[in-house]
Image 1 (cartoon, rainbow, N blue to C red):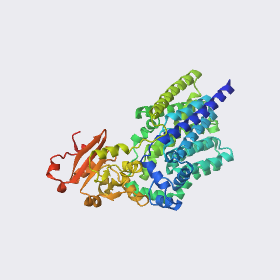
Image 2: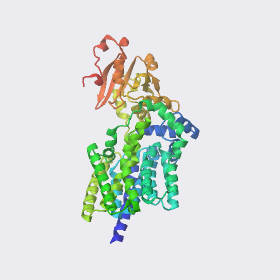
Image 3: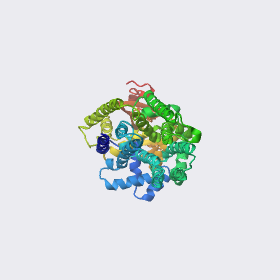
Image 4: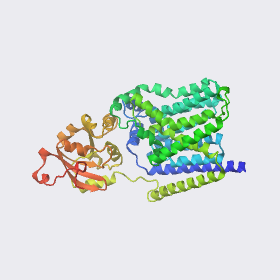
Length: 522
């Protein structure tokens, strides 16, 4: 019977990985690129490797240059850019599923391991990061494999693979350095338990620092250029909300899940240590693995402290590998329950996955594998104004790159965005987007202008606003003495006619209303 369960679990795992790969490719082919991904695309498509390296050296984006070289290679392999630039993330997610199964299976049974692997399909690993042209899924896959290697670190080949996987994680994303924390804590616990100093393991952990050392000049420049007003500052709220974010739950449920997982692992640790004599080194052999899981669950807090001390920025995706603590803890807990509890959890998980995947395929039915242009509705909105000669400013710089990429050839020349770094931090609170666009325009053709240079030439223009987090120009323009008239609206998208007061006619003045951000009539 045990053999049958093993075979069934392996077949389930193969199905899970194959399905996740196919589904992710379909999703990748039909999901428009967003701002961060377009930065990846723009840099990876630069004409030479030297140009890519130069762009990253000057702060054009936040990943190590080696990640863009990988994306450049993928772009040559696959004709569809939406699949090509996301292929590494698709493969990374498949690696995460496999690594979770192997890790949990070593200390549990195959069916528990399969359920824990399936849980990753309801996490942020699966969506959006399995279909995003950024390095977070690939980084997490390398970290997950490193944890598998750490389980087997008494063999030299696994120690070598541990070092290679940690170095690879750092090559794809700088924030992989956070994953060294749980491994260092676990190995310290192993030393305290066994009084054995495994120099090979510590050397493997040190390999995770090599990319950080090699790319330190680039990382220092990023901190200098963007760090003063970074858009995401470390906060305890973000730490407490991490697991809710990771599992697509409310922050309160996330705290409950993380708390329950932590208490459960501690209870297992205490029960296994009961009656043991620490001084005589009689702790259970997997003591350090329990500590590893606890340290993974505590990793967001460690990242918060590190970023507070170093005055760095922090957002949830930088801590993504910490999410591995949830399926690992679940595997430990399910293994110690009876078959009925395992069956109930499996049924609930299947129900959740069926609902999630059914909704996905239902939404895909009219455009499976095809992109719905996010620029079309904006173009239609602009056409409604009947002002074909006026330039169109995109208020949010993130919208600008997307509209530029997906807009029609006839419309794109009208599209611009403006920057005014002297006042950027007074509105959205960060000048990161404006700073990045000023760098990017040196490498790719962008119509990015200093505000006063643009308005000196254009006393009248259109302003596209979608009311997003970094959509601050309606309020900024009013404060600068401009008048805005709402010319067209569709859902949350608004198009304003903007004129300087000294250029406005009496007829226009009679129809002017302030923008929504200033209490406009809606």
